[in-house]
Image 1 (cartoon, rainbow, N blue to C red):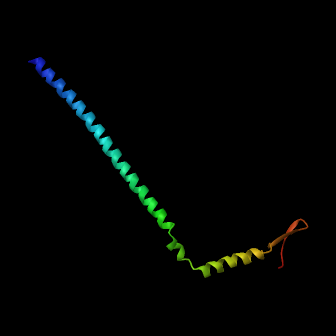
Image 2: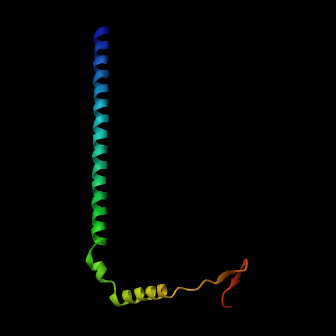
Image 3: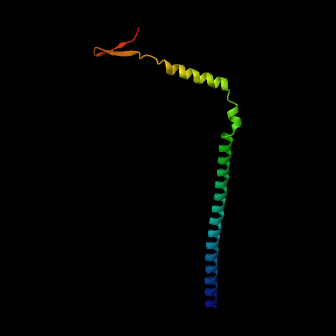
Length: 98
């Protein structure tokens, strides 16, 4: 009788260890699948945002007259640069024009 109980315990332990191993691998596969799906969803959202940014409708909202006016201001500033406030004369800095 003792050997039957020992054999039953051993069989139960082996089955338990196998089921634990199977459950662990199943859980890992499930988690890996969930992570991959989440990664694919995030990637799709990034692509959608990138496409939305590159749409020409967003560029059509820019007013060409204001844009040209701003560019003209920058060109005018570049054409006549501001003179420096301080000038180095005879070993010291002297204020310009004041």
